[in-house]
Length: 517
Image (cartoon, rainbow, N blue to C red; front, side):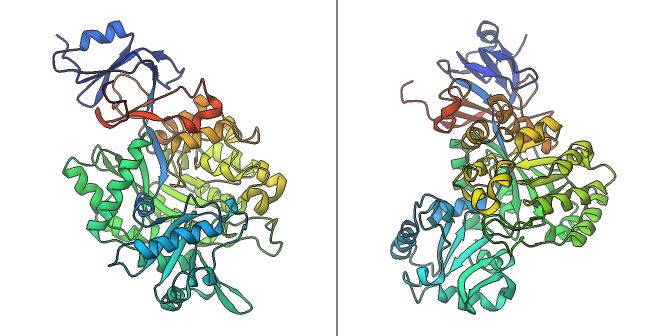
């Protein structure tokens, strides 16, 4: 006799996201695994006296979102420090920082803000030292830009950290520091905000709870100089994690990773080792992404190497020979070209599923080479918020390059494995899906099914997880999301769709159903 299910979701529109995307009325879960996807009549046979049955009243069920590029600790800091992501102007950002300085934790000397984006402001300029000095001239203040490649510091913070910063990455005007620092100069700022294990746990659990509300059931987490790997494993051991975490370690941790015997894909059902993370260039917002032609708004600037091509090739060769997956940040067209060339020198880059993180600007010949080699494009569709006619890409890249940025349509049509994530800018899969479906150029546009697949099946594939995650099929793990409305029926309003239910490993971790439903 077939054992009863632990959980049944019925009266639903279940999209399997398999090939083809078949639909069903109901599904059943036992021991964290999907055991039946079928008509409601058939699934009812698995209902026992202890089965939890949820009637979804016609709501849409899809696989749980797997965010292929996150920084959960930094995302948690938005919730603990000043969140500047919603600031609509420079004055609003300063007001939020001033409120943090006046009402924040009295035991905390530093004033931190996260997530500002000047491209959304009427002033369209970076925060500067003189702006922050008006908030305090005796407490250090640091405001980290949304891309985390640039920060603004007041005079106190700059004086305290200046000796630790490379001169070339401290911006000046008339020979004096403006308070704007980029790339490696942001490192000392991140160290100043670094958390101890207890604080890290607070940040990660806050970020996890927010992720659940947004339908995120798994993340590919980029970590560096952090207690996060320890905290994730402690939460897993205590059965309190409720989120699948794939940890990608920064390349400067490679020796430690090797010494401890870690390997790509090793771990538990909830926490696994991912790849080794490196950089090539910086960001478009900071004008440090490496371009083959100058920036449209700065004809003397083509960006910079964070890791130069020769050093990258040496790193890729070593990491690949050790049997690790590589995840390499590359944004500008010159950076993506050098990254792909380094991967092509590997014996089997597609089998290793080496990944280009971001790939915001990719020339056609490089795109074709990625497809031929099987190199994964790990992209952030939410970045398309900057791709409009008056957006950041227009300012930095000009019309032609703006239109071919984030070319998801071309990547997918060429056969490049496509995985979607957010970079926590912000952590919101439905926002990303919305932008991909409603992108300004046809080279960027995906169908609803294609966009959701990139955030589910695509991310699972990028993590060697396609056999256990990414679709709703019998035998797959029960990581699921129920949506309040159908994105297929409301393609112009996907970013306004709420998540009703999030299920991880067969357990409901977020439930927004009306009380008494």
